[in-house]
Length: 58
Image (cartoon, rainbow, N blue to C red; front, side):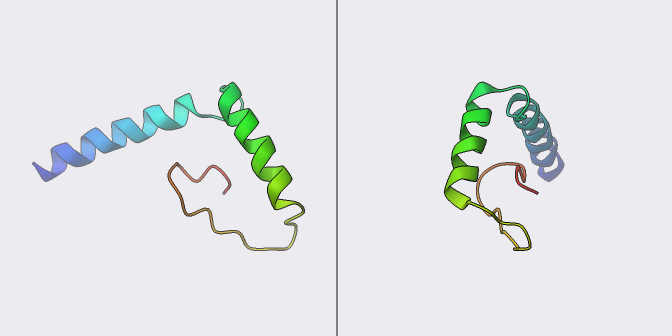
């Protein structure tokens, strides 16, 4: 049962990443632009992307 759960979530994660790639999805493009504007210049800083998603800002 445990392996079935991992398999399901791995597939779900791959699908999520494919659907929400910043170059493919207009919603993620808008999201990225808004977040970048809110954050400002982060050069030389360490940012923790601790939210839902696949490490979009890594």
